[in-house]
Length: 547
Image (cartoon, rainbow, N blue to C red):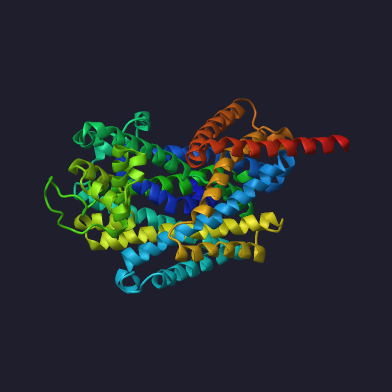
């Protein structure tokens, strides 16, 4: 067994590539705010979300390795070309748009944590400083992805680099948590309790907020209660959605085929998902949640409110938190006055009303502002020292951005090859990889993807995730595709039960996310897409009958 495990570890690779993409900026941001908002209570969320995603990835690997064929062509032939091409286009759109936050995250790590006195905004003003760092990060990503495009030994070097970066991320965040534990800042009992799912917090604030909500005026408790519950739901949905994205479902089958795996590797594929994806993802995100919860949960951000009513604020607030803090106070004033009365106020009047709010409301606002890696490093510094807080933590954050950006480039190369029906290598793949460089340019101009670009991409991917999962569920049960490899008996029941649970969870998450973005427009958007699939299905059926 030991020899088999060593062989599996040596041959593994595609699962680690999955880890390289999901252990990125989105997972980091959701984990950081998960700790800020819920403390240790939602530590169970990301492991459960990843288990759900791995079920479908395991099914995709079984289908791909059993048939030995490229999934897009099989989906187009056996299910629907609308679903196949939508799956491809959604993956490419996700690669291009969501590369931007990865470059931004890596850039912030360099400017704020690692080299603030060399290339920070105070030394080299933005956008020039940001452009220099983004350019350096892009060059690193291009060099690494070119190994993958070379194939053969180059692909092995690429996998080795990704494994190294992911391991570095986990070790950096692990070192931070260990240091916090030695300082007595990590309550092991609460961490273990947080690994047990508690569905109550989908409908009520976590218990640790109770004394602070009780301190505000009775007529305004509903505002803070509803705000916290809505944010808990959003972070629940966001954390679950960040585990497995649509482009990950594209990467896994093609990375296995490119590696030369066949039906004999089906067991290795499931092992690879466990060792290369589940364990690094759960450890990295869990360490971030623990570190964030220990320093931020129910702790007002410094520089906004005095410790006691009527006291003095003794330090400056972090510049990146001032706007979000003022927005929360403005929402609180609007709740008290009503939307129409609030809209008639001039900006100075709004600011005056916000400044007159009770101390307890200001404390709530200061607790709930979203922090980033800069705030995290500053909060860790008194306990861990500057080396761990700034450099080790910053190195982990830099690794997050570089690994995710690199993997997005690699996925896009595979997408372009499949779009043009070319071999999964060579210059077609390299050109596809370089297309993601647009995200680096965007990161210089915008800190986040422009809304007009991010919104349609999000909607498209949200619709496609459950539909893609249903597609693979249908493929698993299609005799004409799977032949003798179609599961039978108890194994077929097990696969279908697990996949149906996964589809149900994904439909709920996608439906919630879509409704929060489009409201009532969600229904016609989904209906049009499903209608297109049905129309094309009957057109193809009619043509086959005529032939």
